[in-house]
Image (cartoon, one colour):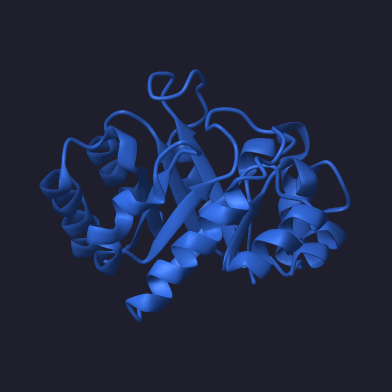
Length: 214
């Protein structure tokens, strides 16, 4: 299981200490929730934050774009060290629009994923699954940390896993929202490969919380 701590919940008054704890933990990814105040009603941080953290941690830098203009943000974050870019299905015009952005991200040598909100039908992903490295299932409404896990997400994970298996693909399933030891186990059993957790990790003992998710 890949664990991706979300820096949205990082205590920025004690950043150095918390990043040092991540270094010795079992986390292998670091998750950046990028919000533009338009696609979601919140603002987070720009690419300079990722660039600064990149200097201190040997992790996969996983960027989740909750923005209305993923093309612009993709370039900015790739230029500053992102290893993977995930954008939202809901902001794209059509399949050609999606494929063009996928091609751009891959042309920069990065992993590419698509995220869907809780009410978006998983079936919309079927035509584009083969072009992706991962799919991010939002198990809360995007925009704010600390929300409760939406139970219906489990069925969506299973549905997506079946689609991937049926087509013999190697697409990772990432889950973000309300992840803790209990919900993480449920998601893992349903077929998740990557768990994103923010509040659960950074509001507890970082190493122990990550260990409990593995």
